[in-house]
Amino acid sequence: MTYVCMQDFQQAAERQLAIRDEKLSDIAAREHLLDAAFGPARFAKTCERLREGRAPAAGLALVAVLGGELVGTIRFWHLQAGGRAALLLGPVAVDSRFRSLGIGRKLIAEGLFRAVQRGHQGVILVGDAAYYNPLGFERASVRGLAMPGPVETERFLGLELIPGALSGAKGLVRATGAPARPIVRKSVAEVFSQAA
Ligand SMILES: CC(C)(COP(=O)(O)OP(=O)(O)OC[C@H]1O[C@@H](n2cnc3c(N)ncnc32)[C@H](O)[C@@H]1OP(=O)(O)O)[C@@H](O)C(=O)NCCC(=O)NCCS
Image 1 (cartoon, rainbow, N blue to C red):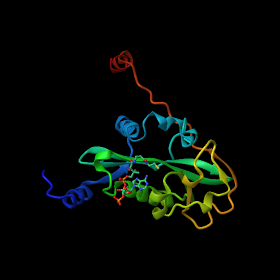
Image 2: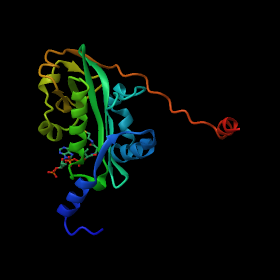
Image 3: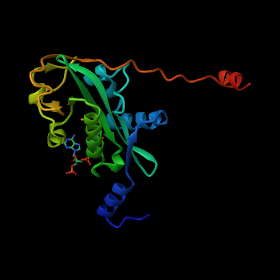
Image 4: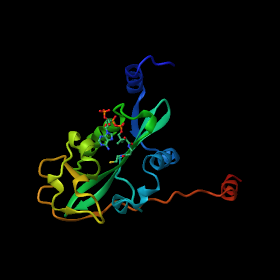
């Protein structure tokens, strides 16, 4: 299909965009997207210390799909933030071919909506304030908190889903998510021996 202008493309993309729970079969496309968006440095980020070896929060690993193709990802993780149960948002990434179409904001809005539905109260992240301030994230709610590694202070932001959820929270942020389940790949011999 040929689009005459950007607006046509945007409207078509909005009609076809689906945001759904991540599936096991999305892993390769998700990792490819994250590699392209952040490069290998993504594994050195302080936030990664809160994600490694953990499963994302239940129902809060989402993908954006356009025309059957995975074009966006967002995940949230369980934390203790100065003694309060909270979520870490991130990483969020959108395929560079489909940026500035509102997909990032939709992923975040859908994730936050589902987080509220599941009774979560506060969300923290490390990201650009220029992007996250209009979505409600700000510095005030995380001023008393410390991440388990270096972060640029002005990029450390929080959002209270319930008013006061993070107020007065003080101390180190630490991971509390369930251990990630290893992906077991069966050998060809195992598959055939079970089929016999
Ligand atoms: C950040 C990201 C997820 C936004 O996805 P997206 O689908 O393009 O976002 P939206 O369409 O909802 O919003 C686009 C707007 O946000 C702005 N924006 C994008 N990244 C920004 C940033 N880091 N800081 C400030 N503004 C930003 C764009 O310029 C655009 O502005 P416009 O609407 O005036 O054109 C995407 O750019 C991306 O994957 N970037 C690489 C990975 C990354 O940095 N992830 C965020 C970690 S903090």
